[in-house]
Length: 135
Image 1 (tube, rainbow, N blue to C red):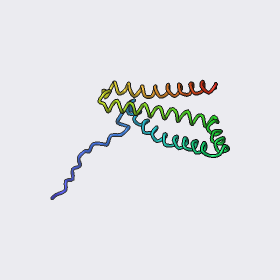
Image 2: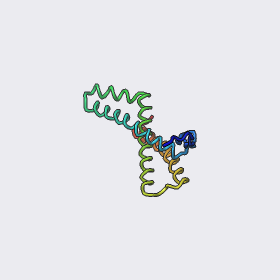
Image 3: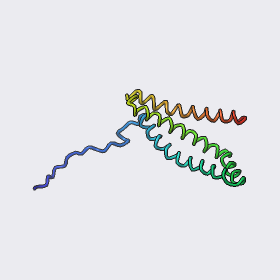
């Protein structure tokens, strides 16, 4: 057998320089990122539960951390991550039924996921502070 010296032009692998980022693509990436962030947020929740099961001093310490401006910012972010991931899961559940797979519909659902997660996060925090007795 003889070796061919001619080289064929091989297609390039698709990458981000070829594809234009669409809302559906961005929300798919965000769904994965929020899934990872939920892991760390759930570890913080477990820490709070352990402190609640521990001594009063431990609970006060952890509550003090979560009650600080940085702690509240982390909890606000965790709330958004939780709601965004949940709405992304609902989006995938809709797609699993065979609905909403058209390009325009999937783009609208992806945009609604982002908008809905932001709105629901704000609603949860406003209601939480209202029930608690103020900001």
